[in-house]
Amino acid sequence: MHSDSSRPRRKPGALATEILTVLTEAEAALTPGEVLERLPQDRKLSYSTVVTTLTRLHEKDAVTRERDGRAFRYSANGDPSTLVAWRMSRLLDAEADHASVLTRFVSDLSEKDEQTLRNLLAGEE
Image 1 (tube, rainbow, N blue to C red):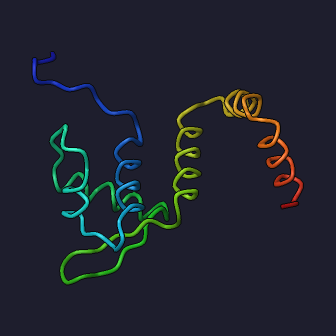
Image 2 (tube, helix red, strand yellow):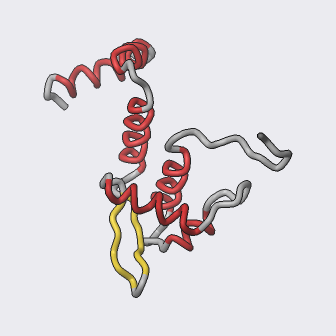
């Protein structure tokens, strides 16, 4: 049963992606409360939801954390290209047929990007 105030569920990984974006754009490590403050305010998120997501990201090595008193401060593991690669992996993980997704992805690449991918797969740079 849906009420008028119900909101559509976010896509799997969407909150993690938003949190990683906040951490990537931050100039220093952030506490969960600071992350929560910087997230879009178009929906209500609890502090515990942010902590849970940060903990999962840490378990997946997407973020690092350091103790700061009773809390942790979190940083993204890498630069924006690392974040994009992580997002691509998350999207691929959401689909059962990886071969079809990868085939379509490669077919949509520019000639230059396709050659770069071929070089990378061949162990060249």
